[in-house]
Length: 129
Image 1 (tube, helix red, strand yellow):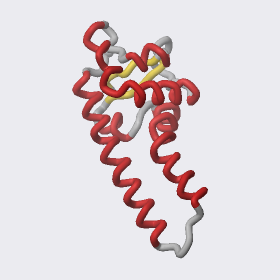
Image 2 (cartoon, rainbow, N blue to C red; image 1 turned 30 degrees about the horizontal axis):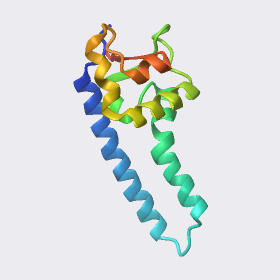
Image 3 (tube, rainbow, N blue to C red; image 1 turned 135 degrees about the vertical axis):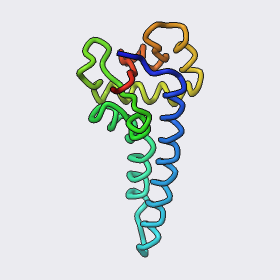
């Protein structure tokens, strides 16, 4: 088993950023097809895109689309056959979003290449084979 390098994580983040931008564009275009879209529907759509994209896919699929295309996956540290739970994925995402690139500082300093948000969520990011 090989742990994901910072390059792999950055590649996944860039891919996910592009996917989120495309999703926002597509949802916005979809909304223009209707005469009136309530603010609640817009809020829910953008919450799903911005806030739930990462935690949902990480807890269900072991990672985002960016992770999959980068051939890495997020796993529970104690059991690499399991994904982390949704609540832990939410906490991991919030911390990752708040800390930004600062969270990645710890990657080179530990053998499992864990970022700060991985320590908090008890997760590891490994290369898929």
